[in-house]
Length: 637
Ligand code: WT7
Figure 1: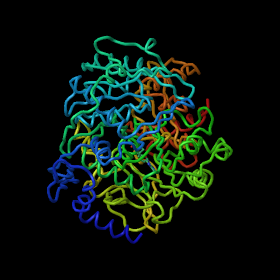
Figure 2: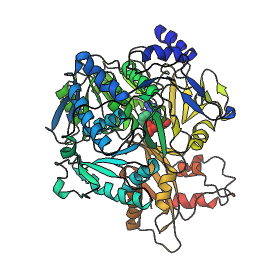
Figure 3: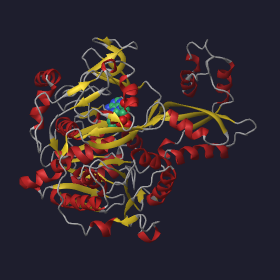
Figure 4: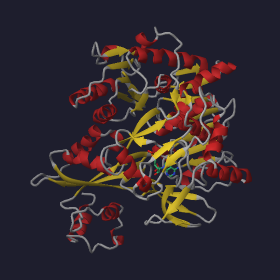
């Protein structure tokens, strides 16, 4: 703790110097200037900008792979892949991973991809997914991974926004017992994208034959190529593209409270140094450890703590294609036992779901290899924390409850194992270089014990640099609400020990199973249905998912509310966004509670959804207070 305090103080007071020393461990083709960090975090002083390692050039893919191979660690195991079906496994060393990445990078170059071009990736959790990310980074291309659970429309929107030159995808995937024809969805997306004016030039298709063999996979000659036959004939070495520290590394789209998803842009140098450093300290990884993060590469966790962080640290990691409950709820613990996993990182929703199946599934497996457990994505409730600690971790493993965001690129508030006492439900203290503040709603910093909104007062190396193609939105969304600060969108309490307790989003974003869903996106998917006149979406407490999606729908005059229509509306959201965004509840609403100026009072809707209409608070501004009673009567109908 003492040591942390000293280092923490230095990291805040001398960020350039602090991170320079750490950055020395990486390979840089050219070094940075003194005082390499420049920034403006205050909209009143001009455009927001963040720059780290000014003057330096490097390559993150080189640092993930070549650096270890050059140090004689080419035979160390990089990946242990566990397929969806028990028994499908694959092991890949650092040396092999480097060759695979080079082959794919050569293919990409051959397809005309150059430094700065965007490549969309829509893949299941095969090793080819992280390898594809590293291949893009190797040639300075900007990857944009789209989670395989997103719909064709969502994929199209993302490919169009970043003007993807190439799409990397797969024929299909098995998720648990479910069969998903990814390429068929990708084809619909490619058509939509072309209709919107952007034609993706080439598509590389991995034949995932246990799910969809080539013969059953739609294929457009000329545009589409088969991955296995094209990539295997490429040379196994490929010159690295040295890029500036601020060269864009990737885009990752995430939902906000308004409008379409934002393309969060991360750059190379700062992201690399911060991701690797949090990985090392927060997980305390050592040589010989086996780390397993259950996140999909379609989310930020799968970027920083699967594709990049572990490799930057030369670690051995498990990559899992399946789902925790397939074929039984023992699956995770069987994987832990068979690969002697030491570090396990997952989301509270998975913990709650597995907890619900009972202890026997854990107890029948040998989980004695576990030394550290991690949690990410949403606040972890103390009951799930204790189960994770006692039953999974046998009471001996520290739990790191890591608070961070797509935008922050890496852990921001998190315990360091055994450095200070944990408190179930608190992410505890800030990581080096992170200066959190609790603000009141006027933007004043609150001291000591306090509750308010969480903001960050100065840049950390993996701060998002912009919203792709819309710097104005970046400024207004993150730096507009409280001038001088990065606004997180989360509420938070700081206790007497200085520990932070995240209380959840304060904006119109719902956190469903650790996935961020904008209410506005769900609403617009609903109102696109011809029967729907108006929709208002709120979150409500859900025992497994953390939050569920609760949609109030006003139908067009004359349309009957039926069970079939309910299904259709849910289907509309599935096909516009993805299955994970499907509303849990559709509540028929002849009218919505609005102010006289027409603004929907979501606070009232949240109370009705959670059966707390006795605590509505002040509703004197409602244009028609009678609406509340009508809605309460229609609940569950
Ligand atoms: C939002 C960010 C960070 C990777 C996964 C989600 C919530 C995340 C925690 C935590 C409480 C958490 C916040 C945050 N969140 N981790 N440990 N405790 N809340 O990334 O999709 O960008 O969502 O997830 O509300 O703002 P994301």
